[in-house]
Length: 332
Image 1 (tube, one colour):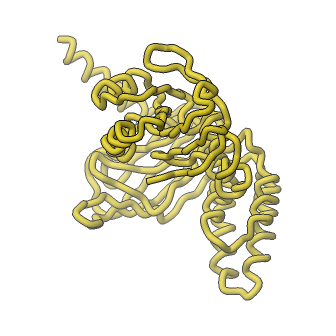
Image 2 (image 1 turned 135 degrees about the vertical axis):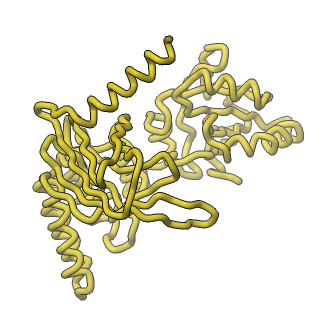
């Protein structure tokens, strides 16, 4: 009886989210080319909404506090040619569904052909048109910088500004000084925290921990909730291993670390987990049976420690000598 009630409630929720118009929210109308059937999923923030496609059409409703990046997916492995932005407007999109073979995987692939009804779509179209017309010009670098400077200055709060700058910073078209000037025009408070962290990592390499620097001390709880300070390792060689229970490559390194800790008695290892879920961390520790101290930073890769150490990915490690100086970074 309980199971029946659960599925009935779930059906009502799905139907409600697909078909109910919300005041001061968005209405997203989707036309799908390519003979797609089944449920289509809309992913944004921490939400995964679903609607059943009928006659190649589907409608989502919801609400966002600011322009928010979104994408489509299916029950299978799926991807899109690009993301798009939701705003609290009536939005019309046209997408094309196809199958793609990437290595051994069959992927549900969506191409976003058209989108209208939002301020973001106008800004994005203007920039894409500019690229098509100007990218082959001899003065492309300066033209691109001036265009981005105008776009970001006029839309400093808009997430598209930060996302676009992050995308451009992956290339070598603009130099570091130009990227820094553009970054200074962004209102960081309104940008996605992951994008801001990525931008800082790429644009301000001088702010990262470097070989020869003194260690940046921190204090975190271990698996018995006892606070461990890095100062306790003064006058000792310390290997700091940054990892998380969900990071498969991180855990694959544990057998090697166990061997090293056994062979080199003077080497101290401190594991720092970036798990948000303490239970998953404790479960991983029990399974891996590590023989060195482990602590946890639940603020994850967006926390102060990751920022100060310049950690943008894991596994990551730092080797420190007896004088608390960094002598190696990211050893394999």
